[in-house]
Length: 281
Ligand code: PAF
Image 1: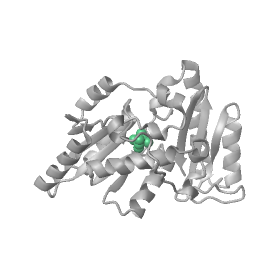
Image 2 (image 1 turned 90 degrees about the vertical axis):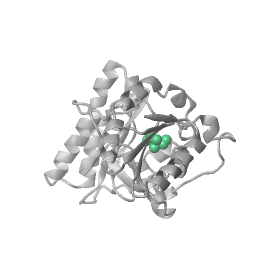
Image 3 (image 1 turned 90 degrees about the horizontal axis):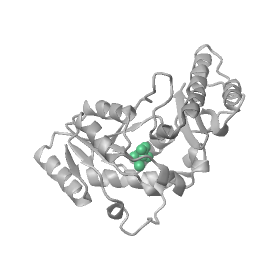
Image 4 (image 1 turned 60 degrees about the vertical axis):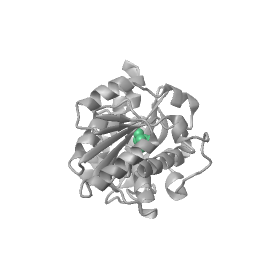
């Protein structure tokens, strides 16, 4: 595995690789590090579509709407490198903040108001703009044929697909299933910040989503009924949102709507830690 820290070196690598191997494909797994099995599973999934695997690690400051969250975001580059060495990763791209944002916080703002005025976009202003800017730039620098994103960040996944389509970017987007611990908790780099008791409390998130899916499958598919289950199960916690949404437009279903397909999505504070999870119905 070769480590590239420099943006121009990354661009040059991809340019040469594509010139020398016109039929081979570059795959990109963008991450913010503190890698876990969820990231590794994205890498294994994309590997079957590409010949050269690039993993990027960059804790993108402009997608944190809260300084404290950015400072507390877990980091362990040595552990990440050790994990990646066990996989067939060709390039680890780790650009420095000063190279990525040479002029400080960029003034550009990327938005899809109809998709960001809901779910995580309400309480995390600027988050999705910052995310789209870095993903757009990573695509410019790495020039991947394929890139993969986890479905745990469902709204992020929808926004990236929209950006690719709108800007006709020559990247195929793959999705990775949510990877869970055996007890159901969706893997997240933030889980490490949960105290043991909080981690136990957090299990209510996935168990509630599984319950909703069971009810839905048994034919109880009125949105109001499913939303009621969500709110009753999660009432002890500070809820950011919990509802059932259209899988493409992310519009929340009305209580009387009968759902044929949708996504049940939740953002909850367990102590100070904000966790998200979802399940496609
Ligand atoms: O999902 C993430 O880890 C980040 O939002 C991403 C896509 C790497 C952009 O910083």
